[in-house]
Length: 252
Image 1 (cartoon, rainbow, N blue to C red):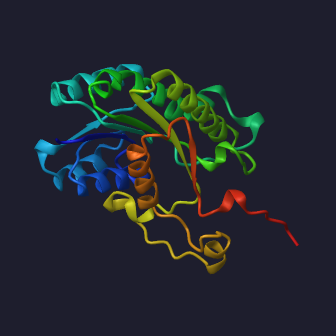
Image 2 (cartoon, rainbow, N blue to C red):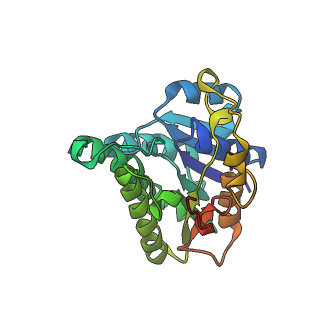
């Protein structure tokens, strides 16, 4: 039977890699993003009958409702098997606390935490039709460790971690919910064509990771795949960071 995946923030970076990973496995895919140019580029390379790509700001209730009207028409009675809440503001740096106004703070919260609530709520009827459904919330290692002036991003991801275990308890056993915490993932090659880069990282950037390299978006896609099939895993927070969160770092 065809399986269907929905990814938010699907146009670029980690979301784009997750979408294409599951396309390669024969899944039908639904992608939501605010970047219509990136979605158009993806749409040109995918069979129309197996891919639905919609422009949507998932932090806004009205836009999510309209997107799911179209998703419901496209799915019909078919189930949604896997939801990946990946959307968010990629830049974690928000500046000094005293200079950040409420509207900018709310942008970080809405893009990740509020969006996950809105999309998961809208997706529930479709997820409940599946024989085994899963939700993967893309959090961050910044939910549990920080650099200066990243508090809005950290708060959004920390809230997402809490929302994950609460959803797991609330929605199980029919729907399993887990979080993935990426560390340093190089997304340059996974941007739309006009923004694509091929960064050349320094040896010390690679060597500071116990795994000996910087992460790739496919590392996150593989984790989504694992969690979808791991039937006894729910409410968990999986660090995909090359070991950085377990490494003690001192300045000498």
